[in-house]
Length: 253
Image (cartoon, rainbow, N blue to C red; front, side, top):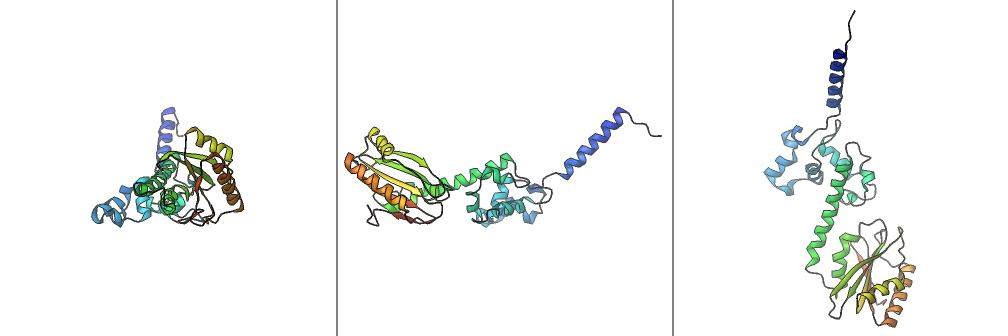
């Protein structure tokens, strides 16, 4: 007869837990074959030699018991059915990322921070070159900030007499295909900061910047209100996916 005492039970439980931990152990970069390690590849050939999945793997650092970190990265980059690769990350929420085995709260937030950093880097490239006299320059500046949004957002830009920006204000967040802005609330803010002119800019999540009927109506109301108050609406720019429409360029304002 085998005798079980407290010590035997505790010893068996410790071994059981160790076995479980080993089964769920995530494969780290160091455990990959040398030829598959992004760090070594980067050191040998430069960061430009890394694929998108390998770059993401460097940040994630570990995979799961079934997937290497590079394979996990590939899964993340292919999870969005509408946007492939890195662009898909910009259209993915933290909750969606956390549904992937091996991606917890921390890793999900790291991935989203990378997406936000890429947007800001793209915006920083054109920041010094932006000219608020040129619709294409304005569109370039706001493109990365707004083209990935899943909802329509409107930004109002206020200018002083020297055409310098006084204030930038996000005035509304709408549904997938509509944002509602009241001329009253917009021009109240313009009066508060003593703006001489204003510019509207908003995005179309569909990627097509063609003005909707509501866009045209809102622009008309804003133009009329601005003329009445002596604070003209100088342009309304709609951001699509790497494309834009300027009401001023199209002679619609």
